Image 1 (cartoon, rainbow, N blue to C red):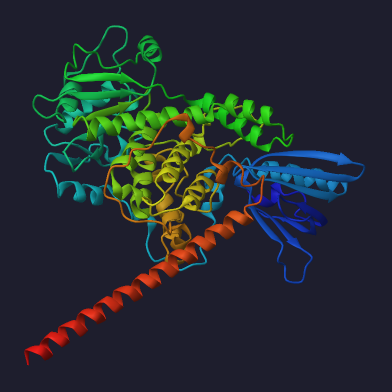
Image 2 (cartoon, helix red, strand yellow; image 1 turned 90 degrees about the vertical axis):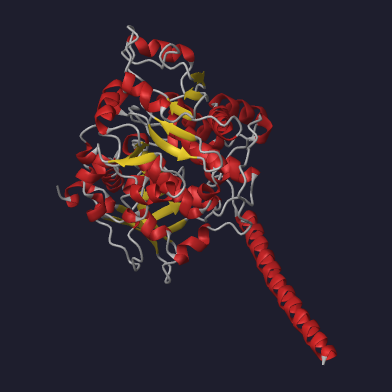
Length: 550
């Protein structure tokens, strides 16, 4: 298919662009296969907008006489308005944008056409491989092994080709366990706690059904993670009621009779359409211009967004507590093990592991616990808060995770190497990007699409020194301790950097940030001078003593 077939009117003049915090500006609008481009009439072309079609969530059309208005609502929550003279021209542009922003084929998306203008220093596709992770693990324990059982994705389509499993469990046993778990997602290692050797594993629900089916290999696999005489905890991210109902559909949970050394705890985390509705309500509340306090507070409460944040953080803190304070191993799962499970396992690691609070460590966490672990980004991020089309599998699961990380970052502002901009950047690229990193729903799909060969990795761009500097936290001081965030309602706040950034100017916040950076820089310079003077003084004292001895 040629993009030209979808573009009825490739260019329109005398278009007025309205954006938050900017005065209206007149110029020329151009449509390409992947971008909506607006250029002002100013000589320096300073007013220029490049908007990916894939970033468009919905569009609305309005007409007053022959003047048409297109309101574009973006997945990054921006709203822009284009005033286009001529009804026919406006209708043509609107239908072209609608067609180009809803392309069915993944291979027609921009990452397959994007050619970087920067020098590629490292191949981001090869930055975080399972064997590198295993090398770190094998330096502290020899109880685990790399299994290639899922080579060619033959056992579990949503797992990577290589997984880390207990050394005492062979591949034949893993095949049997896979048949006993939903979507063949058998328990695999998520995190090893160096401090006490406890581990966190993740999987999907067991297929016990109404007959209480069991699998001895499954029991053996998760028992292999226990120390002699120790108990473990199974954190089920569904309510007990939902878990019991799953049995009627062939699913279920681990029964005490067959897993006597494990204590099951249910921590309900909502899923799918409930989360999507919550996002829609929250964004609607944030865009409400009525300035009515009661209305704002009731809408914010009705969205339940902060309640979801609290539920997820509470479950993650529980997992971290079991590992660090109880000295117990943990297995986390919900139904499929691709959504709430990953929120809990990745947040628990941020609490427990200082490496995950560095830029490189956090990128590795996103690759390991989200991309390789099979979170279906293509389905979950197909629509954002403004889409009019019927929801299928959309849910802001990854955005909720990033919001939880921001809550912890806000409570521990010196413990993270990255800043808020880094988290916002990941949110934007998960929904619309020139990079192939978040395309596809799992490693199997990415492999079939040949993404590493045909597209650029987000990490290749982010990890260049000129980009990294934008995402570094000037307050960072490495903290090797476990950090325990407060989940009290009073401690949780609305993430203004995402939900209010298009509703109010950030000029003063930006100025304050710049001032803080310059103060910290000046402080470091003074510290360096103090250290140099101390060295000088020590040298002079040494010289004096030598003179006296002579």
